[in-house]
Image 1 (cartoon, rainbow, N blue to C red):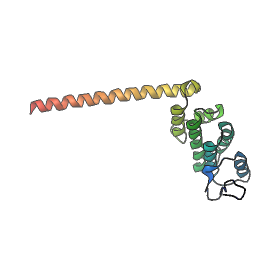
Image 2: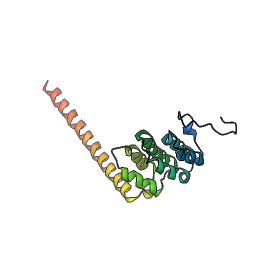
Image 3: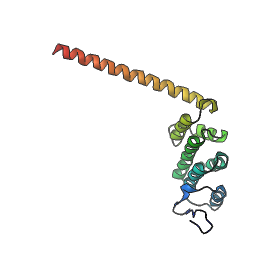
Image 4: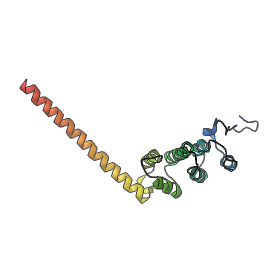
Length: 159
């Protein structure tokens, strides 16, 4: 703890940044080009309002360091989980990045934790498509099990 009662965040090692709850501290770190900005933005997503965290998450999504940029996308997923919503800009950033890369899990988190009625059209289509695919895979697996059971029964009768 710092002497003023706040946390002592270490921008060099990243220690304590998951507890970051001060958007102005993150802004100051951004201005001086500190390390671990992606880690810090996860802290903001966990400890601040969506309106405070969102613009900083968006900025961190532009970081040159791939790992820290990935943490910014993770922060978006945490925000969706904690708030049950995202800002239009965060929805747009996730859509622009698309599934299959660093946005894959945040997109899934968004589809899981944000109610369908709050999702923009692209996310709604993605949710419907995922639901249909999951249903078809379930039917396929059940039919495969049934065929396997029937085949084993036929072989037992023959022996």
